[in-house]
Length: 356
Length: 283
Image (tube, rainbow over all chains, first blue to last red; front, side, top):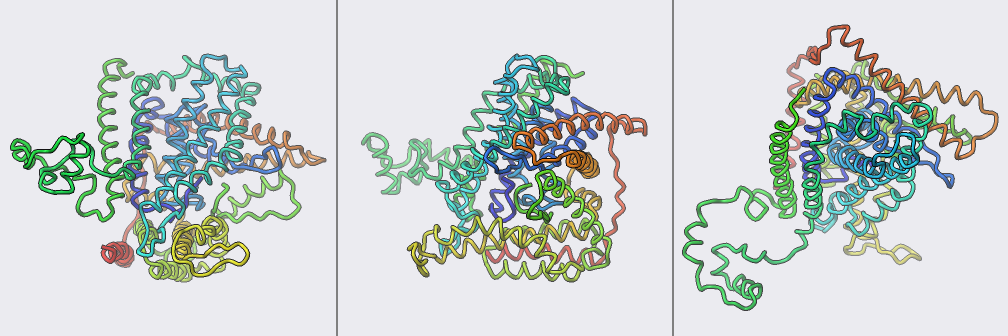
């Protein structure tokens, strides 16, 4: 799960850093607002805790062992945002000081485990636990499901990151320059291990911890009981934009599909398309055999030069790989939408809940 | 930590579960003490300004990821070995701490690629009738070469720079000061927790007379996590009060006392020129 250096191309790493950055920013701001002076000690000590539990080798049924990432535990106890920061800090120390996970791939590792893992774990836990009492069995199921799903979504993301490498980056002989396996191999290879052993380790440690806390330290679980926690109050603004985030995540994940599409989208023709015989044929076919005009419409020609897109056809001229340009454009676009979302959510939450 | 990492585990063939758990934790202490000792010795990398060194090592890691030539990758690997030798870090130590672990982990992942990547067949494996292809061999070499070279550079940084200097040097990369403070404190407290966990496991080990069953082992580990979690909150509250008592009001100040000399700039320019040259040659 910890992707080492050299498995992902630099552009994928840059895209992952760019995708993780807004989440780090929001997480940091929310945690700081909520905890103020308590933020530094709590995050530091909790990150150290995450690091240490990542080292525990959990015995699994069947005689094997597995390491847990602890993302389920962190998201249940701290909420998604503080968990994001704590797991990222633990991953950074693992990568730099202990060489577990790469430095260029740190953004991707954080995106998979800290960001996606925390969000999925938190959604699953709040969804399954509902308004159940802190000592109910339903909470055990919720914690287990949260850990299991979180780690599998992380593995899925890592599998997609591996799988798009041979599609986008190879040398003159056709040799893949980074992770060599296509999605058809990378995804099952990642998922089999995580749907079984690693997922089971995360499930057992998350559910086991909640079971332990129910008996030994129930007040820690009360933090995550609905309606009692400051972190859930802070999640209110999040909930209002949740459906948008879902849609955005879906769109971002589906982006590589565009690489497989052929032809030009209907109506997305340029003035030069009307002069080109091949393009005219394509327009004819796509328009139900209605012939296009002989020349580009006058108004279209006049307006064509008014605005030149900063990233024309999703791949600027200085980029040699159209695939990379496509991905970068997607990230850039997603970043813009995120920025817009942030501004809107800030305006809305600023009106709804005056800051303490 | 299940994947390749710098901490060399020393599991005996007949050690019990609790001993293995404790052994993993002790190995982390060993690595930290080792890194501290070697960063205090005299050597080429030890003598460089931490900020220049951090940026330079990052540039070299970038080179290892950027290059599309196996020759350049091999040259970078040799550069890493040479830098290690000039800093008192022997190839034997690099082999033990990085090369073997990376080879076992990445090598295993890269191995099927030599037959799975399509291309002109070089020769056929006997019995299996699988063809080893040139693109397959090249892609496996790229993967292992990049992982080995990048991990060697990363280890060189850790073995030649005290951790606190690495963190302070991160300021040069624009990492926020609060983040640097959190990372520093995390590093401090992770040893506190490792010590606590080690003591818990040792205490348990001394009271075990028969091997633990699977369910008992799981309960032991989850209970240890639970105890550590409770201590986490206790400790963070204590640390917070101690910080506030000493005047902490949410602002973090670091003492930036690094001073870059001419040779630091020379090393930095050399390291930055490499990725630029690779990018230029790949235009």
